[in-house]
Amino acid sequence: MKKNPLEIQYLTASDFQDLPFEKVILPLGSLEGHGGHLPFGTDALTAYLLALDIAARVPKTAVLPTVNYGVSEHYKEFSFCVSLQFDTEIALLRDILESVYSKGIRKVFIMNGHDGNIAPIEVAARSVKVAHSDFKIVSLNAWWAIIGDLLPSNFFEVWNGLGHGGEGETSICLALFPELCDMSKAKGVVPNLPPFVDIKWLFSELTNTGTSGDPTKGTPEKGLKMRKVLVDMVVRTIMELDKTDWDYRSPEIK
Image 1 (cartoon, rainbow, N blue to C red):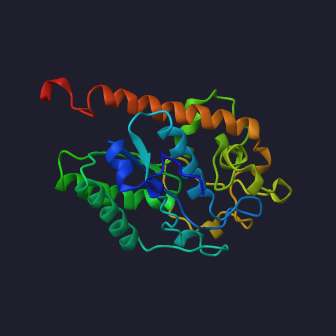
Image 2 (tube, rainbow, N blue to C red):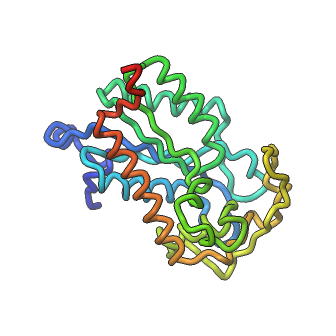
């Protein structure tokens, strides 16, 4: 096995002493169905590979092992779903963050790949931040929701690229791990949901394919552009934060 110096799980105490990192990226995913065309580990694989892209461009940054399970109860009617409970994931994330802080790391970027993790991230990260005011925690909660703002308005063909295994997610998977994708099985349903409100759905209420949106519109070319603009945005954000040592306070209160 080849050691990747960006991945903390492969480093030794001597490595860390010789070349210490000052920032860590925590990738979060899930294990759940993504239709017949994408792997069960789609969310975890996406978060992990994007985290490596980011760490490769930001000095003194390393990637923690991916949390491969998330809160996925709302997808349980589709195989192969292995879910954590909310309390379990909140405790897990809080423990990881507390452990990182105890080792002297004060800057964490959370790269999330799964919708069910958003609420646990909020609860865990807020509680740790309140406990340690000098801890800087930044999270990209839903890359799939903001990616449309980073691309031309006509970039996606259906539902602004949204969907669980839809056009956007399928495209980025085709760019990151095409060997695990089978586009001959791509099939989805575009839900008819009202605007402005947030319906607490079970996924089986939205689709009978295990996929929402239109995965047939996904392409590697779209995925490569998505990967670039997304990673560029995160790198730019972290580098800007680095200029002030992550002191994001307004001038009036410094």
